Image 1 (cartoon, rainbow, N blue to C red):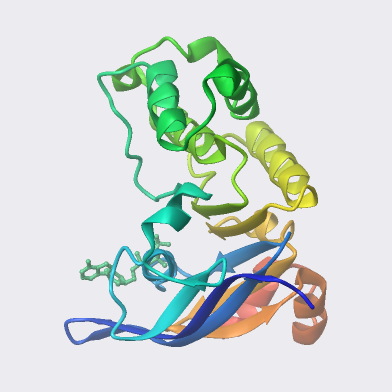
Image 2 (cartoon, rainbow, N blue to C red; image 1 turned 60 degrees about the vertical axis):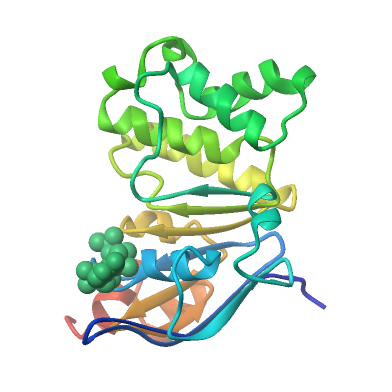
Amino acid sequence: MTEKIISINNLKKKYGQQVVLNDVSFEVDYGQIVGLIGPSGAGKSTIIKLTLGMEKADSGNSEVFGIHMPNRKILNKMGYMAQSDSLYSSLSARENLIFFAKMREVKKEDLASEIDRVSQVVDLKDQLDKKVDNFSGGMKRRLSLAIALLGNPQLLILDEPTVGIDPALRKNIWTELGKLRDKGCSILVTTHVMDEAELTDRVALLIDGNIIADDTPSNLKQQYDVDSIENVFMKAEGDM
Ligand SMILES: Nc1ncnc2c1ncn2[C@@H]1O[C@H](COP(=O)(O)OP(=O)(O)OP(=O)(O)O)[C@@H](O)[C@H]1O
């Protein structure tokens, strides 16, 4: 039996009169990278916030590691990267990493090697002692990703992790996500970059508040009779 790491069940959400999520259900299995793609404003970040219990759904629920959310203890077991960076700008990158590593209960003896590991993944090793205030937007994204990776969490939820990151580093980051998945980490990632969707184990396509397709990239391409996820997306939106 596959182990469900995230179960999202019949989520509905309105903001005022605007229906953002109609009736959304999907799952993330153990050791899978699941990509959530959809046009801007489709509700991807809303799904993530409702999944984590950061916002309240009008109906439906979510379970993470089999536990009904929200639940504070579960948050320690996972790495979450929000769409907007929440960093301490008056501190250096290293000081930010130390602060979040302590929150994530990284052992004192592992602290230095852990900071070394995550900053290597995002190519920030040489910038660790710079104040975050002086970081570019892309550098802040990279630091946020490094923070999410601290402590080798069993679950990563990444909201647009590679925005503002150049293609070469983006490729390295995806290689690293693949390695983490192979070690049993489950990953839910939202993206606008269609090439990245090709690298996932499953893609859920969100349009107008509904998941209209949820399958492996190769099955989706076959089903829509196209050669790329970009074209699946275009066809699903009715543009092809
Ligand atoms: N707190 C809020 N109050 C009112 N409307 C909101 C709120 N949060 C989100 N929305 C609206 O809900 C819709 C979905 O927003 P959401 O951020 O989930 O989209 P998204 O798919 O993540 O978009 P993007 O890819 O541009 O980040 C948008 O129309 C947005 O304006």
